[in-house]
Length: 471
Image (cartoon, rainbow, N blue to C red; front, side, top):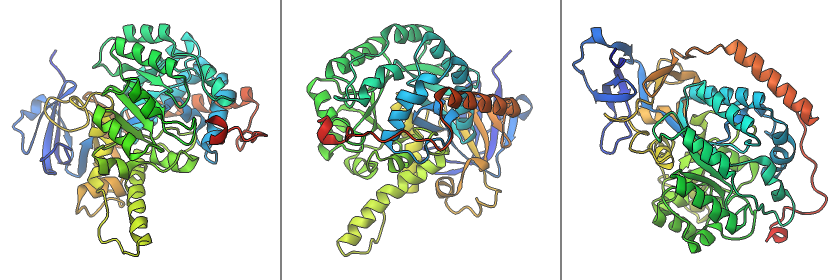
């Protein structure tokens, strides 16, 4: 039996390929790949499944480069928490009480929720790897959905508990035995599930441990995604320390980067390091201003993520809007402070879409396979319905996608050529069962933690989170 063939006919296609204008076109999918893109493709329609996209905008699947997928089981629980309250809660209260069964449900819910909003690939920065049973449940939950994930291996909330007390630095490296086991199990770098390393970095680890973790990842040929530069954690320059040790490279993505100087951003650019920003929760929780404008000005386009649904929503369209509004607001404020009315604004809607697509692919090390619509690339596609009252008229399709769209107008989603959302509904998903499983798992988790919705961790008696104490 030959490969399944699908023709997406007559959509307004935004390829995100340089120099390719947005236009009405067809997309031919053969198996898991895009076979052709063009207007009026000559195909025997009796030999293909035809999807009418005449009232659709078709874009590359969104790529979230920094998401703690399992945390959706605590959706909204920490909506009023600061970063310090979040870290305290997830490391010392919530994290240790997850069971493998909880994690299976949480990963399944989180992946399907992401697909529903048009996300086709993500880096899963998962710190719940407290036992082999927990790890296997995490990956089984992902595999059950057809989501494309680079799973960040090696992190464990128990090992992070030293970060909550002076000197706020952990000394335990990633679980090399489990990282190696997962790398062997998921040996392919082109499957739906691939393996990366979730690294805490010098904000939270000694440099000896950082070097050990990076050496492991590079021995195994896996990408590293590392928190760095958020808030005022250690009072030191992690980027400069890594540069001095020769650790910077194009296999490294740094998450947040809020307190990086312009010189540190240049170090990233010079060494091919990618940056993942999560603008909505960074503003809400106290990481610091997302450095999007300064990065773009330096020539480093970041990619964007949600981070945690414990604090913010999961809609990637919202993340794009934050990624555009924040650097514009900062530039506008600087002009106004100088007594000038801004005549033009920095960054464009296409810049925001670029961050959500091809730049995300670059952070996964898969820009040659993902992130744009081009013959030979994986068929990861999102179709957006423009008949909804929120979407018409369409003067600039990119503007409509970035500013007007949301999950309610995501009509169809394809991952590796397989349709996982059709006509606005997830394909083959028993939502009633998923709802019941998630509600039961969430209730059990809170009961084991001894907390109820509205709870927040108590403020420490002494100022343990001040930079002067942790420097």
